[in-house]
Every structure is written in C-alpha cells, then in structure tokens.
Image (tube, rainbow, N blue to C red; front, side, top):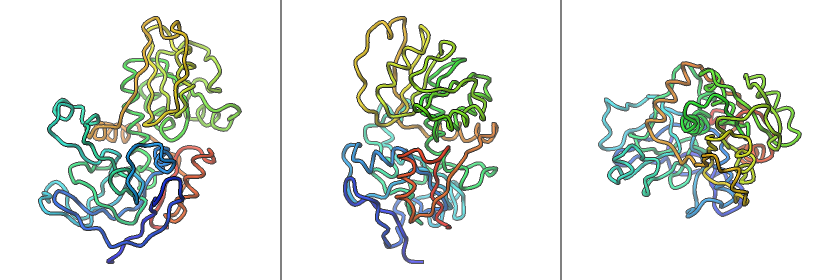
Length: 334
C-alpha cells in the first residue's frame, strides 16, 4: 500500500472531506501507525467550529487512536517499540522536554506542546504518524473499539477525578463519553456519583443509574445532598454557578473541557466558604500509563456506537446532537 485515506478538515466550519494521500513516512523519533479505530471527541467539534486558536488547515482530526506500529523512523529504539506493537495515541502528541513545566511533572502545561488531531494530523485516517515516546501501551483485555474512548474521555476524566482529592460525593455534569467511563472508576473506589444531564434527558439519567450512580437528574436541579466535588464535562459556562451552589463549603468544581462558553457572573456567597473552581488542561504521559492500568483492573466498560471512516461527519453530527449514549468510534476496518 502506497496511499492512505483520511477525513480532512480543509476550512473553518466545513464538513470533513475524504482524501487519498501518500502513505506518511515517519521522521526521527516517529512511528507510522496503521489505525484500526479512533474515538470521536467533543474537542473535534471545537476544532470543526474553529473554537480553538491557531488552527492550520488542512488538518486531520482525531486523538483517541488505536493501531499497530507499521514503520519505525530513525532513532526509534526497537526495544521500546517494534513493528506490530499495539499502541494508543492520545491528545498530547509532543512537548519540548526542557521547560519548567516539563521538568516538574507538568508537561501537560508546556507552552510548546503539540496536540494530536490539532497541530498534528490525527487518527481520522487509515494511517498516521506519532512520536514514539508519546505512544501508550494498551491493555490487551480490551478490544480496539472499546479501548479508543479511554484515550481522551477516560484520561481527562481520570485527571479530573484526581483533582477531586478524597471527595466522597461527586457530581458529574454532562454524562457522556468521559463521565460514563470515569463514573465506573469512582464507584469502584467506593465514591458516590451524582449524574447531571440536559433537561428532559431521562434516557441518559437511566443510563447513569444503570452504571451505579446514586442519583441522576437535570443540571438545574439541587442534589439530595451537598456534593464534596463536581466535575463539569459539558462545555457550558452557565453550569459553573450551578455546581458551586451544589457543593459544600470547601468543595471543588473541576472544569474538564479544553473549551467552555463564558461563565456568567455570580454572587460571591456561592464561592465563599473556601469553595474553589479550577480547570484541567490536557494530560501527561504518566496519567496515561496510570489510568490505562487502572481501567484494566476495574475494568472500565465503554459503551460505543461505531461508524466507518467515511461516516465521520455523521458521527460528529450525532455527537453534537446527543444521539447516542457513551462514546462514538470510527473503525477503519469497516
């Protein structure tokens, strides 16, 4: 095979276009991956809608990539990665390695970081290039379709959960790909999960309860008990004051999205009492190794709706309009 197929974003707000391209060749420290599956993420919608800064076109979206190493670039240690290895490629595609953030276990904040499916062509394709040092080994107990959503929703969800500290009662606003995975981890850790959904979305509320949530209701509702922490997966700024009202004094509100609509003004009294609001940005490779090991132990079960590569636009539209539970995955083998 000398060519690859990819769904390409060529202009702001335009649909993805299926293109045939030359087979990409790995450079120093890189590998070529034959992609089997790639998760579909809300961040991909932010990319399509030009809500992320400094997008350079054309770009191939997709940062939840599962596949096998097909070629090694110069300098890749065959003892670390070899042809045929099954790997995952997450959002964090590369960092500078020498700034204060990189040197102090905060590579997710590196100012020169590169992100898969944003600055680097991603996995809405039959083949992609990735930096070998940023590929993650995957649990063999999960198949390619099931493991793909772990590489963003799961990883970001896990980082959000860690930011909750030892919180016992955790609210999750926006019960989609990330929440349905990380809720399973929280419940396994013997925490209580409270699920908040869009108004009238009784189907998702029932789904959350089926996973073990102790309560499920609408985002504007008051939970039966004050929460110790809340995680916002929905990119809606108006949820921040709602979550602040739902957490107890000393509670935390964690914003897990890369993009969020503006947060409206709110009275100081709902922040007072040592409540805090913080964001989670990107992920580290350590997060990836730690979470993927934990996900296999739990084990985390992902509910996926599968689309073919050339159905990527339909998958994104279904995500935008909430037409499935759990996560969507593109399968290049279909």
